[in-house]
Length: 100
Image (tube, rainbow, N blue to C red; front, side, top):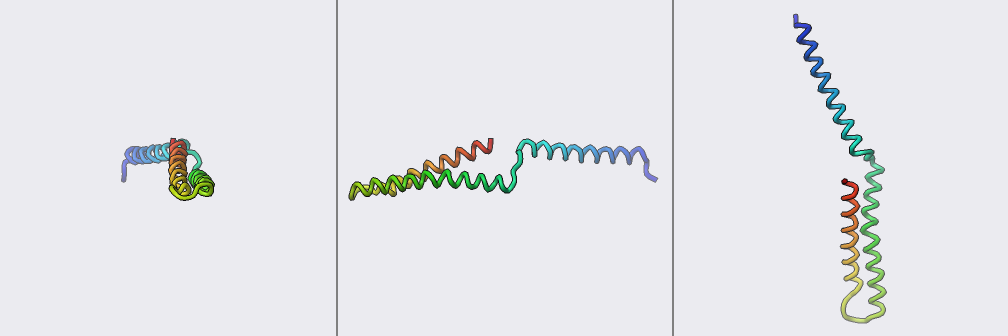
């Protein structure tokens, strides 16, 4: 027959490990906050719009400049690239803010 004192010590160790795992899981959840599917979709939309708006603004300004001036540099393509770069920097900023 097994020693009851030894068996109780083993059960106590398992219980302590389980409680420790649950405490760690709860602390991680509190630190990370509520990260649901809706949160992910919202972040995806925020990043998308933060890239799309400066890009579209660059295209619109470029088309307006190209309509007023003939030949030479294509302002539409140039400002599309500038708007895209600004949008990517903006998206990076938002992702860094969320990560912190």
